[in-house]
Length: 413
Ligand code: SF4
Image (cartoon, rainbow, N blue to C red):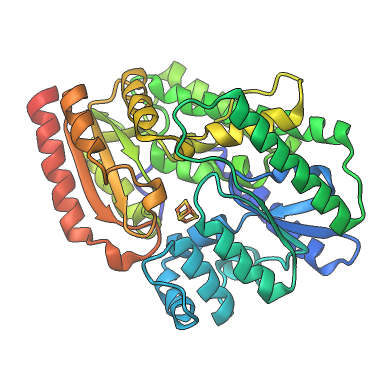
């Protein structure tokens, strides 16, 4: 059975595959060309500055996800543990470090390249977690490349003008450091253009996700995990905009025709937390069989930013990267989830307690119970991990999902 046997195929996927190939082959060529420069960046890091300064930008978290999705993380993690990285710290980090130490990369089989491109510079933002700083520092030492980051205030309720001004200042300092390292001055009009392109791709992605408010939903969380790649990897490019224009048109057509991502959609569920990359197919097929559409998720919405209005590009970057869900406090997150459940006509919530990512797990301090009481809907919390399959029991989780759907049947039919 193919990996998409139990999915309603999305035509844009063919274009996505060719875009991904072009992106990785270009990065590989850039790393081998002394006239081109490669920067590594965190997934909601300052990539627009790097692009505007002429760097080609690579995102290691994507490599961590690929290692998980290709079910090879467990082969890599022991090598990272062997050099002192805790097996219970971020498994994107440990699998990526372990893969480098072991000379393994899924990019070889997928795109015919040796592996991640060698960086000239590594840049991060701790708006998602502190782990990225240590992850990047490993590779900075390995490649003798400078590591430059920003550290926004975290766990925020309201994001105030003072917070934004502080982060804007950090971004400004980062620009000065990159200019001094590279010998290239930032062209501010180029930054405005890149930020505009970046926000337009992000806005189109948001529109795609918002179409899942339709009943039946034309797209699920599992489709989103595939089609979100350009909004992360190619933010700031016209290609990403063109891709989401195409995907949006296809999803609009689905809504008009009443085409469901899960035929016979019986229930609509919200997914909070990280994906379980090694088990995406099994979980997708399980929900498909049960007539459950995962219509909305925190994860896929993490790259749906507000549109740039043509003002100060650094302020837009500072605000959007500080306002992201993962960087907010419990009160904000709880209200966000409640609002999402209303907007997407959700029948029940699933929380993934990812063992190695406490930063993107929201079930550890009573939120699941509070939401169950406040929203009056079934809630499932299951233990797992984003990449390390040692922390996930397929049999146990499938049984829990079946019991959760029985609860949905009891209260929503
Ligand atoms: S947010 Fe979680 S998964 Fe992502 S880099 Fe940080 S610890 Fe790892």
